[in-house]
Amino acid sequence: MSNSPYLLLIETSVIVSSDPNTWQAIAKLGECLLPEVVANEIKNIANGKAEGNESAAKQFQNSTELNWQITPLTGKHSDLVIKATQNLSRKARLMINVAQSAVGVANAYPKQCVVLISDEISLRDRIATLGSKNLCAIPSAVARQWSRTDQAPPIVYQAIKYLQEQISEPTNQFLRQTDTIYLSNAISRAKAEQKTKDKQKNKPNYRQIAISLVKFGLTSVFLVTILLFGWRLAQPQQFQQFWKKNGLPPLPKVLVQPNQTNKNQ
Image (cartoon, rainbow, N blue to C red; front, side, top):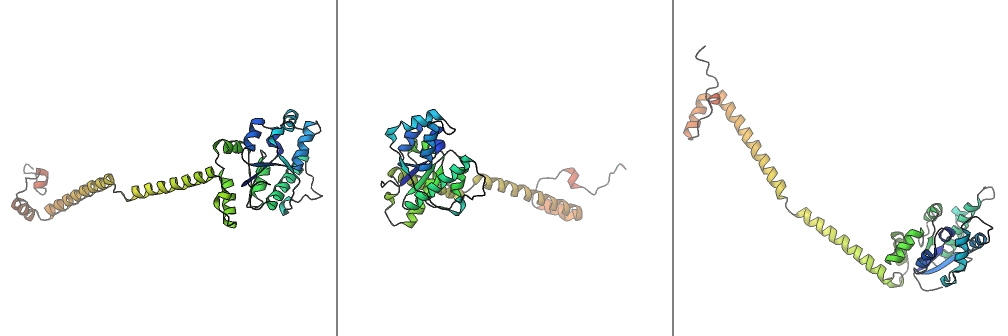
């Protein structure tokens, strides 16, 4: 087995539902393995003994340049036990067998991240519930994106993080240089965004301050007006003396003599 930080396990759906371009893209990611049950299924499809894309199966069998290895490894898990009383379909039984193979590979290579590539959602969900820290599953579309950008998906990073915590080998034994750069950039971006948020948080909001001052001024003027008007009503003479003493401009007539009755009545 190679020193690649990744082991890629390929499931039947990826082969019969894609094309050589996808296979070659996946092959660039690391060492690829075929569970024995998958190799047998591809052979049966190519020979017309099982349902599936016979043309794709034959084309895959002739793609010797891929050099994908067949693995007989299988592992036991309490969630992958096939009971004799269960009436499972052929496909369902095959999915469980593939999951058992994935567990076996993950157990045999605990220092490597085992990535099952499958376009079967139910199988990926089953792998996610097994709790195997160095085992994860992704669809072929994500694998192609990974190959194109050379940036592993988040679920793979989680498995790598677990390996880093458990094994005291240097980080570059587990992450390719491009992956390390990607992680560093992500951390830098997160720090920069937080710094920007902190600056915005601490920067005075002059607009809000201006609005608050205007509101305060209007409220103050309103309260003073109410107080003066009340004083004028309660003690008109004292109010007039105060007003004249301070040299203030004359008030509107409606305010000057509010208690004066109409002389024409």
